[in-house]
Image 1: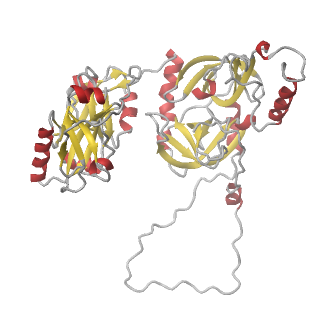
Image 2: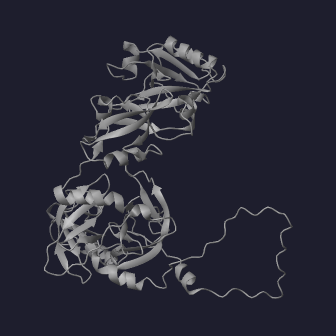
Length: 527
């Protein structure tokens, strides 16, 4: 969730207690020593405790150095009166939790023109009002380049950057990237500016100290400390999710602010929190600096972002899929569900069912790492791609294309089942060939090929894999099928080979995906 909850949260002050140290409780009597291990006993597997090093006695010197480079972002958006736009704010938005919030609410409720008992104009003659919001940012170049979140300035008619000395400067928007929630601004001033640099976020380890500086609830220059809690978090904000998780307190208004390491380098950009209450509960997320560095550089130079594009639809390789493909080492890589026609992958010979193991020398540990690796590859560069195909590794060379606008997909409408479906024994499926009747009932594409699913038995292998009526079986074990008989023959062949599962390529309105189905006896078939 974005930093969008106007609720203050109490923080537990555990960090100072660690720094100052507390005396250990005194035992009421003598303490017996621990018994010695018996002779010849094997050593324990627990690693020896490592002493903590480089723990600062205070963050004050670092905070003094960094605070001048952190700025507040104030945005204003003109809004029509509520009579013309019922969804628009009807009063200025003070920082949540500030004393002005209740003051403005009471004032406008008493003095709004057209209210009962109030003289003046009716609601249709109310003047447009201005909605305000606050966020954070930081200066990366003394020429006036400022980085923040896209959602901080999205839709703003006016953007102002407020320096540490409360100087407010009108900002120019250089560019935004909604896919990574980044924006770059420029300010012009005769005042000397302080700047900070991006660090290497890949070197940040779980447990490292970090500082978050920002403008929570309009309280500018707020410094909080914590550690890196986790790396590589996917919070379902987009295809490039790779967030740093931290327990440093982050609240509304911290959006766009920096996360520093103890060297004073920006290792993350604070973007989101997880909170059932709206305030910090110690689970915050920051965009890693190594991702932001390239994006902000492009926005600064051209105002837009060019990303590499492979032209494939991919899915996670599960252990069952890996077993079906003979891929050793369990689920890894990215399975190509569809190579888009005329895309870079299809032109290079990448096919449906290939597993991408390495791209341009970088290992693809799981599906979601591939889009980030490809996106960061320069457009037009030829790169080697290592695939798993036909039970062995193969290498193809792909010339990376430029990511186009996201395509729109139509939704299919489920329909009544067709007559005389064919039962696939042991899978819990009844299927039928694609006919004009089934094409119309399931809203299939005119050029759709394969075998359509008509029924799915409850608690069957197919139901466990969330197959539904209207799904189309395009391939079985990476071989195309067009009739139920071809599907049955392929399944029987796999059973004779004592294969534990069958790999089906399923097409839905949302695209294609590979589904491994366990092969078993007659149980679970629709009756």
